[in-house]
Image (tube, rainbow, N blue to C red; front, side, top):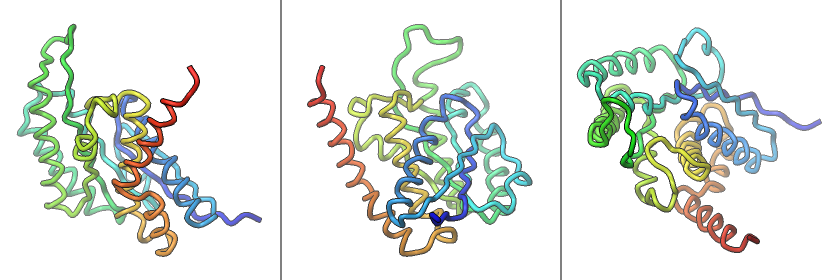
Length: 228
């Protein structure tokens, strides 16, 4: 009989359907890495939520991830109110759950839009993203929550190479963002859920930024050699 590890839940606050592909990729990466590290089937259950109700997830082993991308599209909203709301929510969330909590930054690449919706401006969205990313760091310092710095890693490679923008659109953008999320969860989210030797092996298999760089190089090499 094949050994099966306890299920690990990824409960993700991601109200927009456009936010889902990176987290779907992250769950797949985590399952593959943990399986390869141990030879054991690790079931990663992804729960994409429009709101977080702690009573629904109490007692289940896993992590909580917060996407702030939805807030980037609300550049017209009063920033002081947005920041105050997240400070309250983060404090309650971290205090009332034993799970590791992660906040994702937003990639600071906002392309110009020819037919922008009413009230939408590129500068307004960029400014909101800058504030959100700073807020993620402040929430981490205030509560002990973790930060998944999607912005920093994607900026390292560049939007042109990864062919995405702040929405993480496109297959490659979602895959790379999922890789970043998986690395962060392996780094700080599973210490109480996965045996130390298996977890360290999974981290080695991922390889951090160097590993992601190699995977991107392999991707581009394979696309260049693929038949037309």
